[in-house]
Length: 483
Image (cartoon, rainbow, N blue to C red; front, side, top):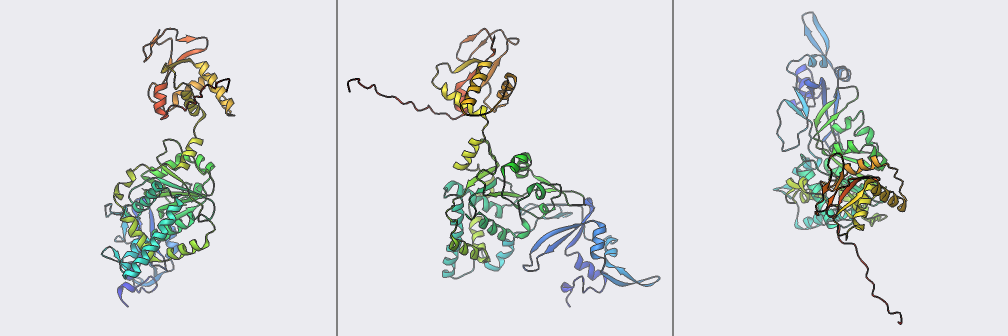
């Protein structure tokens, strides 16, 4: 038997057993823990990491023993006891994640594992090209294009969104060290977003793909050990309540450079986070999105593939074919400037704009309405008492069936918290100055009235803030009474 064939079961002495054991086990000193890399028996690729404390690793491997000569005679000794006392055991100072091409200290155990598809490349690719005949190459190209066309359909055939998603996927495979936006796919059931998730799962490998309908438990919950292996996280059937309850947490997960993993019963592990997040939902509004949202790209997929069994039979055949997936990988990673993709602004789909509009606060909508009403006023700084402006707001709320109870103090505070250009709305307080000269040259002396302090609203700045064009005016010709 060759040395490389020796296993824990076939070892006949401690050194053979140690060599076999340390191919997949090591100690992490700073975390007081042990870690095992588990391989998939079918694909012979990485499956998952398992962590142990000292009691657990003794229990797990306590059945391996051998006869050891000692001063008092031959004794039955457990291999794991000898290993735990071995000063030359395989160990690392700490644990962290470093995707290629990142460099790291050899004293750190790197939990990054290669994608399944990159481990498959040597089998099919030579000099950057899939080895096949010209006829086979044409057939392979057609199959890859079929998958790409499916992705385009999921993007509702929107060229900007579709191009962005292809580049998003390309960077994910070629430069996994960069974090970027989260993608949200919305469609009716059976439109094909799940099939895209299957393709991604096949290409990155089962261990690096995490799908859950309970992110509050598995992703950002008290115990989240599955995040140690995961790279691509698909939050399936995302609901707006979950999104609102965990809004700050979700924002942090998308952009934060570190993540704390909490294995149950063990010390927490802080590691670099390069996770990619995706949401998929059948709900028409599974999450919120504001005007300045730079973390999420929300896509309302086309439902044109729903019920098309022939289409999905083809896709399922292709996603089970490693050579097709290798072809798709080569296409995606050949897209230009992927190392800079994370710096590109995400396209805002028409559907995301609708969601953003629906999530705007009533006060923001009112100010836009107010600006439209005053668009043609000659005074581009509108002076009004705080009480009158609050009254206008309450009338607008009633006209639009909005319940928004607010007193003058809360109203003024809410105006101050709005993200408006500097000095767009100013409150003139008598105690601070006797009079004020407006930007248009007019002077206001009586700063306080029986309706409260006066406020100056710069309509020109609000026009720019809301990117406002002149409202359409309908001009009707006078009709001759005799006609």
